[in-house]
Image (cartoon, rainbow, N blue to C red; front, side):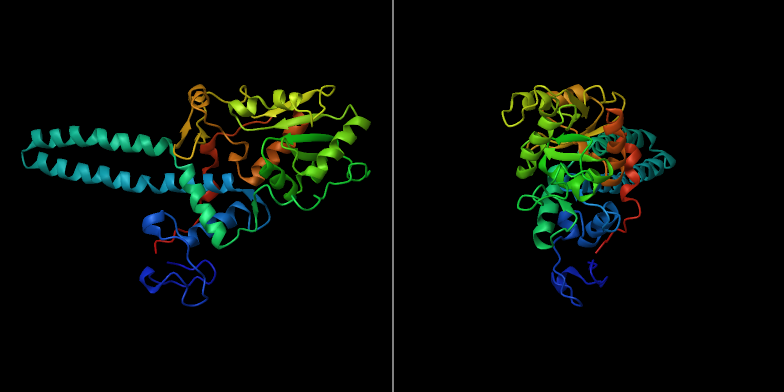
Length: 334
């Protein structure tokens, strides 16, 4: 095991405390498929060395992509291990036996490769992140609680310097923390609030601001899911959101934005099911899966969202184009 604090190497049998600095290891590579050192590197890369806050969803998807890439090695070794004995049998004049071995084993390798290309163990990744966060709190984690007891920076909407040009209603509380902690509300001049009314004190300020400035655009940001697509209808029927006179602009992720040819990460509907990388979006929606709007890292998401609040549409990026996010992560084999 390699200590993420001091880089000290030690064997697992030496204990779960670093013998040099006392760091407490959370994971065992053989059972958890991840090491503390590797996850710490992912956090550093995702946050750009602490410059950006990020959600647990963003970190979990980085971990899933890491597993997805790491598993191709054993599959390739399995294919080589199949071809070698087949070749030996053919050379020794036992071509029929070699052909039978190839016919029997090849479908299994193909099945494993297809499964590896589509499986998304999101719940497993989320559980590991929760374990790590409990032992070593992740400072950059946006979890939807940062402003529960305090005022966010954009509090006085009547201040000329902070007066927003628009109001952005997001589906999940952690998206508020993600955007505000990364100063999106200032760079885009946008008041950010969750559909639940989080932060609570900002809800009243938004209502008053809309009463005084009824032409202020109200935009929506949500996951690609049956729940997300119904966000506008829910807000229109919610008594705490008097939005009837105000047109709502749905930035997405909308049904039209789902590229039929793009394989996207669909998160599982429940804790006992697996997610999937899939281009069959209608089937995923029927199964209750969702594509999270924070499936991108914080930096590309902020860039796309800054353009979306101006253009009125959030563009999706194929996930295969984002695989470089965890490249450069040094794997700890200890």
